[in-house]
Length: 489
Ligand SMILES: [Zn+2]
Image (cartoon, rainbow, N blue to C red; front, top):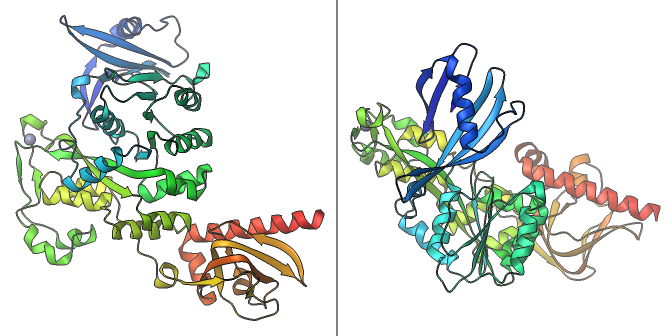
């Protein structure tokens, strides 16, 4: 980071995620340095008003070279330059060294060895997603499979893999690249990032027609990734059918091995608060470590980083939950029951093993939200045959419902006013909200299954569970629109 300010000219560098000040240079050499870097990166040195991006290939000796990605940003006091080192030797392709536990690695390998399906890797920028993707691709790379990647930027080159640079300005979007890929007869496709409906749709289609598809999303954890795909516009049944596995990840700083020592006094309450079981606390004394700081780690107590991972396998139970649109925390609970280790749980393991610190756990992961109450978690499910009455106009019962499977017809005075066809849609909530008798009749159209929720809990549900409230509102709006459409026909 080479940054000009009014009276100083700074050089800073980022190591393991943290910025360090390296030197202050004399202001007089500012223009010379900036111009030199811009020339090396093939940028226009006469242009100082707009941001520019370039690349420097620096030869070290006869065989070695290192790439720098260069970004130039015009600021108030001159152009600020950030260079990112793309050193292939710093790419770590060994899953064990990346922090994968044996169990996580087994699940991940199982998913990437399947002939088709989608593997989604998720996490914020700088959480090591690219490294994980490259490790997977590197493991699968052999002459008997054709691998195509669409990336922005292409950070590392692999022998035998067709890597395509995405360039939106010339129309080479992720979606455009993907469409072309499908005509190139590949076994494995990597899509750098999925942000829009079109890209997501083609990914899903490819994953269901004999291709293994890798991609990344910017979501916080595995359950919210399912929600994001559905929000983008992919129907839940396709998400559940196409996705093999979702991996969420974060990077924690590693304790410096040179100055590592046990934490002398542990805060028992804090340990319980961050998720250690109460009966384990006594045994943690002497196991929980930190770095006291030494010359090897610049006095920080940390050196290098380690990944923590949350792996959601799309098992049959998880598939069923996705299709019936359960709320995120319910989905998380089901996945945990199926063996998922959450990011927080994996981070706590890194503390147990003395690899990272309590501070890093708190900084980089969150506790899963409180579980749902029983009436939301395990509601009764009722099955109705064609024509069966679910709600009768004029009655004063107050329960509300969610459609799981099938279709329903809403009528008023024997006249059909709307239909409910989307699994996940709520209905019957109006009486509980207004305390008035049922305003319409709901019957099953064909065999239908619905969940029943207690009407007296509706207010509490709306107040405490925003994602359910939103779905109820969406259901209401859709029904109003549908009735409106029928009235104006
Ligand atoms: Zn140290």
